[in-house]
Amino acid sequence: MPTRKKQKATAPKAHAVAPPPERKHHTPPWKRTYLGTMSSTVHSVSSWLELMEEGRIRIPEFQRPWVWTDEQVRRFLESIVRGYHVGNLLLWRRNEAPAWEGNLGEMRVCSPELSALHGSYLVVDGQQRLGALATASVAERFKFDLRDGSVHVEERDVPWLVPFSLLMTTKGMLRIVDGAGAEHAARHGLDPDEVKDYLCEAMALVSGSWALSAVEIPERWELSRVMESFRRINTEGTPMDPDMLRAALERATAREADR
Image (cartoon, rainbow, N blue to C red; front, side, top):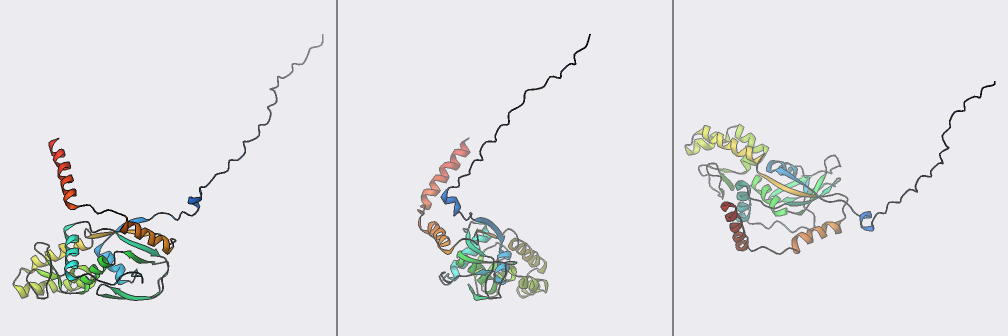
């Protein structure tokens, strides 16, 4: 009797499923013109001075002239020495910049044309603060007390008071290496090792802890957008009464102490 061949069971044919239509992504109109936000950075006092000496910090024509008095410079330097917040600089990055000559406080800067390799910054807000640093680095009358860290405007050569310019620049540091500290100690009958140690401690702070923060505006922003950012920061806030702030902080710290 003939045998039947077993037929292999076959799975039912699967019907091809069409892929879902690709969804179109909708970008809101405001995002199409979004140019990015600003970034923040912190540099030591010595780093800011290097940027200024290289001509990478520039004062645009729409800025007001240098107007700070010696007392304002002294108070600003004192704030940095004491570690107080002195506000953020507002700088507009420019990847390419033409040759420039101008003043930062009492520092005269002559800068060649800069390429994107180095870049430069236009000062939108902070000219007086940067000018104060620059002035202290070139004017011998701003003095630092090596003992208590106080800041003075003093034309005379006084014991323990040394020019800020001796601490803030490479040239000043070279003067110390060459014996400026020892000479100062000899003139005033001070311990030369003590003077040298104090100078080195101060220089370490200039290149480290003594610092300023800055907010950097992207290079691609247009001038109108830069000025609008400046306007919003400087005209739309409401000043806080210091007495009100003090009372609020006293209440907050008193509650913490009671816990």
